[in-house]
Length: 102
Image (cartoon, rainbow, N blue to C red; front, top):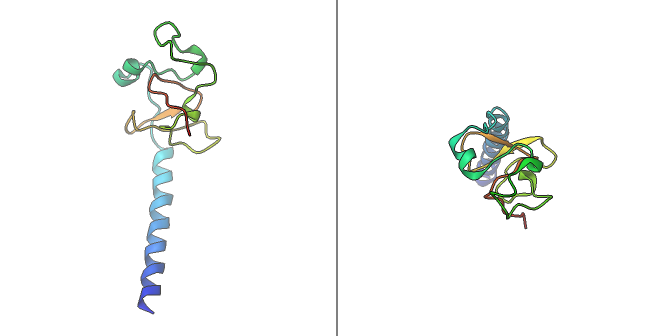
């Protein structure tokens, strides 16, 4: 009986943590194009404006939303990226660290 109670308590705590984490992610500021990390990686909020000369591996259709590093929800306009700790990137953005989702 106590195992069932412990499970229910753990489940409710886990659910609360997930809800809190999504609320925190929504409050993160957007990464600025002037950010040092953004500049180093060639980040742009609009992938169509990526510097194709400086970053020849860029290909049409590559966006943050289709990158394996992007942690935003499907269909969201922006989301967190571990490369820009504490900040969000535009789903339609791009940077040179792009790795296609599997």
